[in-house]
Amino acid sequence: QHIAGVLSSIPSHLGLTFGVDEGSLVRMVMNSRREYVGRAINVAARLQSATKNMGEPAPGLMLISNNAFVRLKIKYKHDRVNCDLPNVAGGSNYSARKIRVAEPYGSDD
Image 1 (tube, rainbow, N blue to C red):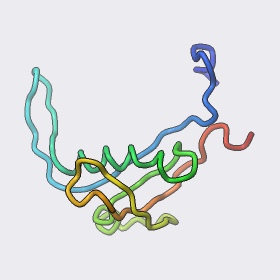
Image 2 (image 1 turned 45 degrees about the vertical axis):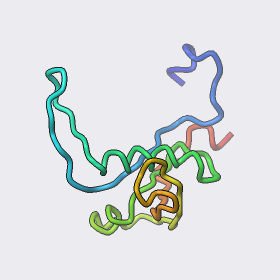
Image 3 (image 1 turned 135 degrees about the vertical axis):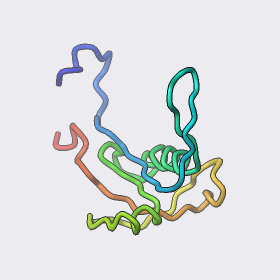
Image 4 (image 1 turned 120 degrees about the vertical axis):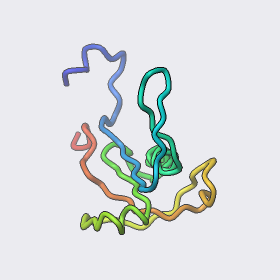
């Protein structure tokens, strides 16, 4: 509601999406800022992008890799899904878990 005044049109759904993976990262300094790189960040970003292809409003969805799901011992209700993660080795039929962490703003209209 606070941002409605600055938008040219109101989207049908508002909210956040999440992609989660786990793994080793490499810390480096670039332009005097600490940055992190690694496969886990790439996979998490691709999972977040894949939330919009799940056949339901993306806001409030989290896709989490099976490895992270097991390691973090997540207890939320979930569905097993396969998604396409471009530019990720083994990403053409990547197995993950889909969790709805929040309802998208505007979903009760």
